[in-house]
Image 1: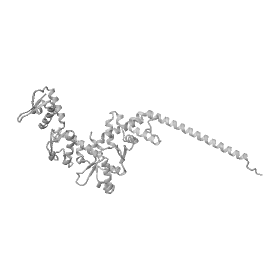
Image 2 (image 1 turned 90 degrees about the horizontal axis):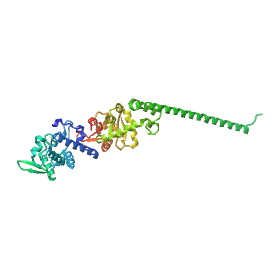
Image 3 (image 1 turned 90 degrees about the vertical axis):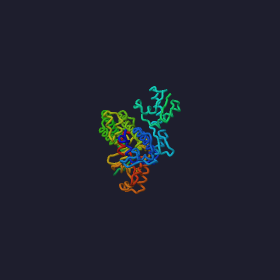
Length: 177
Length: 251
């Protein structure tokens, strides 16, 4: 789905939606709508990373039609809330760059493991490329998953002793148990 | 020689008076009895009428309104009690059912409008939620106002605010709205926008700055308006409940 086709919720055209609300209850509602919007948008456009410094230029956070945009503080508030539920994580110390998980790492892990076990691919080695770009996974939700995110997901499974990652410079593979 | 009034005459006079009194009582009693009879007949007729037209009353919004009006003009409130002969008719039930549905719609939309909803939007949503049958669909504004007003029994959590031009808003959050707050809602409802501001209130209502500020501050605190700080000239206060895209959105 391209950005132009994305169907915005009504709040996106509501000017005060872009101002962090002072009233606690209203703000909680506002953040919750933003959370869903961010996750849904990233899912719809298949994006996995966000740089706060460039975020204000993204149409998600900037509605040029009504001339309203989010400031950095606001975006950070949304991301912190997403982090609380493990739907986002900063990938640098300055908290500038973030990964967005519209499925949490655990959810991705379950999804991938279920796929692998149901397709009988346990005990054999798969390349990471096969796992997210191969012909067999084209209709799977995790098709096209970002490699950095995938590695984190596989680390979760590795901790549960369900797979073993093999990361060499030229070959990145994984063996499921 | 003129006879002087004697004891006998006085007694006779008293006797007459008593007779008059008795007669008076008798007449009064008769009248009372007749009145009671008439009322009884009237009640029976009204009952018969209501029973006979029960289905129409339930199905036809216009008929229902006229029946309500008729009852109101003779001082009968068919909703006043669930007991008595009205309960047999289920007319009260109709409105209780509506009232419950009103609460449901208000609760379901509370997260986005903060507990303020126009009667039009309420009606559209309520009808959508009801069955598809014709009798479920014909709910008039008057029915809704009638049912919503009954909700007052539960304290000040529910109120119907007239915003002029036959338009109403239903407020479903605790906390009474003052005249000033209602005036702000009316001002916005009658404008073509969903927002207002201090200067707009100063222009339109001839308010002092402080008064406008205070009213808007309260509405903000109640969660009925959202503030927009990105307008170049001044802060704007938006009512989601009057914002078209919000009213028309399905979620």
